[in-house]
Structure formats: C-alpha cells, structure tokens
Length: 279
Image (cartoon, rainbow, N blue to C red; front, side):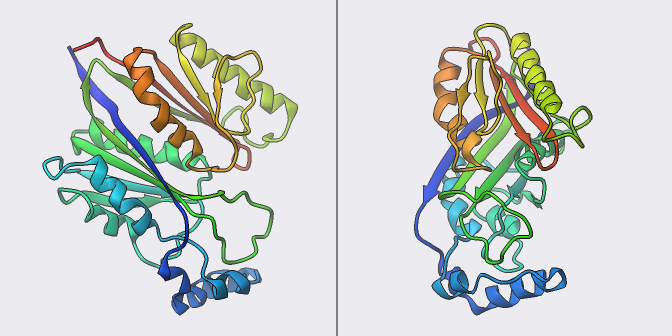
C-alpha cells in the first residue's frame, strides 16, 4: 500500500489572561515604529493595561503534548494573522526548541484565514520532496491589537493555539487547495458567493454522501449538510473544531472536507482528507 503525507494529530488549547510581555515597554516602541509611516494611532489604553498573549507561551506546552521526546520534527511552520505581543522576536525559532529534533523553522503571516491552509500546503510540500518525515504547523491568535487599524478587523474572543502534525500514513489522501482565480476582485458580490458555494458543494459531492463537511464561520453554502463553526475565532476556530471532531470522524472512517473563504483576499481554501483502509 502506498504511503502519503497525512494528518495524524490536531490539538487545540485556549488561554485566558495575558503574558507579562504585554507590559514590556519595548512593545510600545516596536508598535510605534511599525505604524508611524502609516499615521495610525496607538492603543495607549491597551499598552498601559497590558493586554495580549505571547505565542511562544501559548503554543509551547501544546507542542510538547503533541510530540513525544522520541518524535522529532523536521520542519515547523508557524502561521498567524493577529500579531504577537513579543516585539520583533522570531517566535517560530523559539517554538522549534519546544519539540524534539532541530526542525527547520519558519513563519507565515499577512494571508488572512488563508494563511493556515498555506502553512499546511508548505508542510506537505516539505514531506513530498522527502525533506521532512514529520512536519508540524502551529496556528495562533490572540485578542489584542495595540494600534487602531485603517479599517475594521475581526479579532478573536480568546487566545488560542492549534498544533497540526503531518506524517506519512499508508493509504491516506490529504489535499489542500487554494483558489483565487474565480473570485478575486469580486469578493463581496453575489456572483462570487455563488461561485464559492458551488465549488464547495462540488468538492463535497466528490467525497461522497458519507463525507463530513466543516465550514468556517461566515461561509454560507445553502443546501449542504455541514457543521458550521461558530464566530469568535477567525483564524483558529475552524481548526479547533477539527481537533474536536476528527477522532470521531476517523473512527467512522468518513472522508472530511474543511472550507474557508477570506473575503478580503478573495481566496477559497479547502482541505480534503480520505483515510486509508483500516490497519
């Protein structure tokens, strides 16, 4: 039986409170330097109060839970949309020290909710080329934005981290697709919404009637029997829901479809997972 990159573990963790780094005076200096060229005001109230969470603190324990000391990672990719509160630090490198092995570490940001799928695509590419036997993706979001954005943005209700472990599995078929060709430039139009919904329905139909479908908050696909993720965690919510439901779907040997659409970028992202025969 042929083996291919598969998704072996998905773990999630929420956190309350704040990191002490949110009170670091360097945070104000760093954010002020970033926003000064754009004339954006700081959130002095949040900086004074100390609000936000460091991604290293949020995800390090979860990484240790996901991977044992005899399970080295070869590559670690951190993806985020809302910024960290640790100024200028390479958090992906710090997180690479929280798991066995000496993984190549990199970070991905500024791709909206599509960033999680892009990070997973990169992890799978490392595996398919033989560079990595075990690849890890770390997703994180925290609730504080320490400056006023130029336009409204949706921040999460809670701090959250998700760890996805990709390893080779016999007979498993894991595919990540991202499509902007049909919808970019018309992200808010009814025609675009219809196009997105039709593509999601097409992919669900290809998996069969027994497929489990998980849709991100804000993605409406009329007529499709699917689990809708509640609003509140724009970047990690879909993946936290997968962490909760994947063990049951695997036990039932159901194919799985995840779908998300980022209207700012006009990108439809999907993940399809077919399990191999029982071992």
